[in-house]
Length: 140
Image 1 (tube, rainbow, N blue to C red):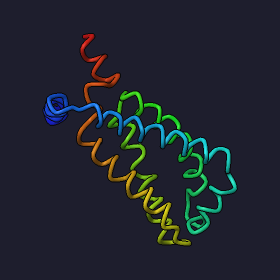
Image 2 (image 1 turned 90 degrees about the vertical axis):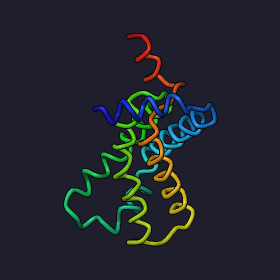
Image 3 (image 1 turned 135 degrees about the vertical axis):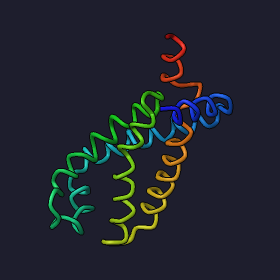
């Protein structure tokens, strides 16, 4: 708990509006990816063809879209940012691995790698001053 408090203090001392805009853009990107997955279930099933023989593949299909939708909203507003990002990490790592297991799509691979790197940054950095977390903390 002390490390999270020290990370929050460091992030709040070094927060900048462009970083908050990147966080919001990441949340909006993940939200629209969730909408895309829900509207194109055939495409999602096609993406998971390389791993469809593994146990729990149907569970994964039902985890991806809601996690992107809910996580994207939480990240965009800066509410429970680290928890929402931790829910995104397995999806993004899986997106990178699916590119290597199945047909390689360079654009999807670059999007997944960049989203994973940005999520890794905000996992350490937190949500910043312009967020719902900071607002609620200041109301206490």
